[in-house]
Length: 242
Length: 82
Image (cartoon, rainbow over all chains, first blue to last red; front, top):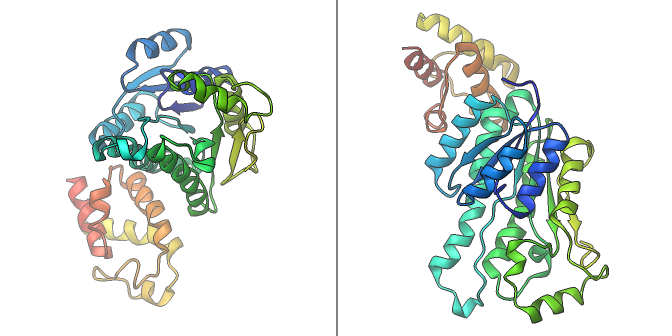
């Protein structure tokens, strides 16, 4: 097994997750590239990152998370950094959304909790060090029409960050969140043109951010940021200051 | 491994986390880990990890839920050791 520190990035096949995986590999981490359905993109990423290993799982299914933990144990033996990036969204106003759609989005909160518990229990608590970095969103703070379950999950993720940081008092396991604003990804590509125009009007820097700009902050929290804990770092071009 | 040896190992691991020294002096199979020994529940996971390392076993979360007394821990570890 390699002596390199290990970073697990969920939802690493695309967008912000992919950028985080690349950046952490640049920082010297052996990266566990988790994906659910973006197999081809994950395979491409794996071919570019030396020592990286792939982990396919539906994180909303407990048995698949348990198997993922076992796979990491066999493959890498440790997790030093966990980036909880995987998310799911359905864009629809509340009155046009059904309970099944709501549950599909809300399931990610439970999934993040369960995966984090497994990583802590099987890896980080043994070494008493680690970093958990949750990718939340500015919309968890500002709200966003058409994304009520998503905004609930993301606001909850920031609360999870603060609570877990306090529960882990006395250990060198730091828990923080990075809350991106509007970032150029496949998720924001789906937004209608008029919505995009309206968004840009609210961003002092006048543009969407890039996934690499989010990954920069994740890398800071993973490798430096030794006295940053229980915090939400906003990366949004000035549209919201927290 | 003899049950007495497991018991000895369990008590040794619990000792640094015990807040009630009197209960530790009178420790037995019926001694409750949280209520009698006053081990901080937030630190119970450290105890379980120490059990795993000391006895070279893996304890599932469902198993942890069945452990209330020192005797429960001894029984569980003995079962895992076969």
